[in-house]
Amino acid sequence: MRRILLVAALPVMMAMLGTAALAATDGPGQPGYGRGLAGDLCGDCHIVSPDQHYDGQIGPNLIERVREPEITELALRSYLQTTHPVMPNIMLTREQADDVIAYLLTFKGKPK
Ligand code: HEC
Image (cartoon, rainbow, N blue to C red; front, top):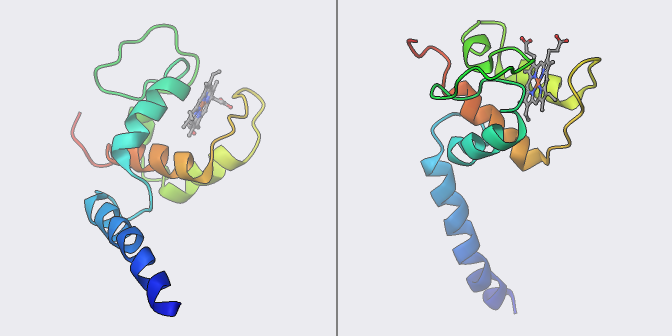
């Protein structure tokens, strides 16, 4: 019985190891997924990609903001988990938040 369970778990474990190796940042999220999510969920109000043009977005340019030292992974995470007067509460799953944050953090330290 125990042996059957182990065999069944092996592909799952290998898949997890594989995604961990692909992730570009130290955090748990996957920037590749985060890019699409950010465009869909945040792009109406924020600039979230270098090839996005200003089109009346009411929120700060997040590509620029993330280059500031105070915008850390923790800062982004707590911002997304708390309520704000202006920005609507967007309900992200833990995984979606991880991915969006990982994507945004790829712009840290990048030249403009
Ligand atoms: C409906 C518009 C809207 C959407 C959608 C939206 N935001 Fe915002 N966001 C705002 C506004 C407006 C502010 C500025 C809030 C303020 O000045 O108090 C803001 C502020 C922020 C800040 C703080 C930036 C700073 O300079 O400190 C972060 C981080 C942020 N948003 C992330 C996101 C992410 C990530 C998403 C997508 C999951 C998102 N927002 C979706 C409107 C939006």
